Image (cartoon, helix red, strand yellow):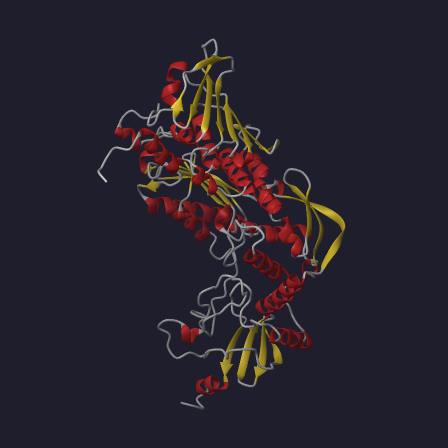
Length: 574
């Protein structure tokens, strides 16, 4: 096939695929244009998860009638003049691709009026074809309506997620902008009702309360506007008592632009070192203000990735500011520096819960490059009959078996026992639950509320009785018997935290992961003193498990010291 130049409509469709990935991409691009136009009020209306309609209206400076055709032309922008301008970008948009890309894969209507003009003008673009602007009576500002997204690219429409998921992603986009620009009034309407609104009074903590809830916002720690090397770091971080099971609670803005950056996430996580349990992550809203020449935003058409001229400096300053703020607000953790045995290598690689729920776990001898170990491989199959000897540090059980000594983590062991019991009851459709004396109302973020609504059936099968109660609130009436000793609202939040890790509701893997979280909360804790009878009962229960050697999250429940290993350590055998 000979080389030839692509037709304009094909080239536009290819370019649109880089900019417009889903309805949330449309919302993002249109809000950025509104902010660059100096808008103080931005209203977003969404129907059908964005497939049917995305409308963004603002009160910005508007677009003159003569420039409307240029506004939807590819690579037409008011924000750049020369190539040098790419290295000092101070606006959110600059590529001149947003409206043309949207118009290439949707039916776009652009209505705008500037101050001083007697009326506004309306332009329509459908599948790349542009109409002549027509006069229309409208107030100052711009309204963009995007209908029937991907109507001419059906393959792209097939890749969209459920309507609930697309609504959630749109909500995430809008709330991010609201946090970054608290002086702007945002209003989001989905499914015919208002789902989010910010006042626009400039109080960022008020916006955080609207997104994460009043209790969380009240506890968030304000980062001082610390400066260093012309870089300013501000925002909010959570105290160690507020944490999540993933990094999704880490939000970063660079010069007002939301970005995804692994190094910034690492900097914040490292700042919490020693203050959070392994596998737990803080909430953080970090806003970095950097001289435009120190950051390259022209990395990807979506503008969600950036490159720093001095990344090590950005990393260092971010980490130091967060760490210093934390240590100024949080009592220092108690660190145990003494240890008779090295635990390096004992943990191996953590497994992910799979459909069979049986998690394999390597011992020291299976680790690459390991030498002769104090702990030989654990015997396979079921556990032998164990006899409780005592408890060490109110956390570990000492047990004797026919093949040596076992040290058992009581928390991990009880997790495994509860998990298998809960999953067995789940498979029988007989998870035991208990009604609350009075239903309680629990409020979630817009994103969490959307996820919870989509997965109510999952919770029902795990013993919860939850029903929607307003825009972002839910009524909890029953919960699993395993969790009756935990505050009901916290019990519900525990499982909702894992919804963000999975986009497939009603999946068996998701149910198992949620069950594991329930059991983690309900199990015996380290530091809890057990009688000898209670120790023995826990051993009996563990012996009856199908996978007794790991907890549901993949951590080992026990260390085995064989008689041969003990004799070698005491010099009885060479």
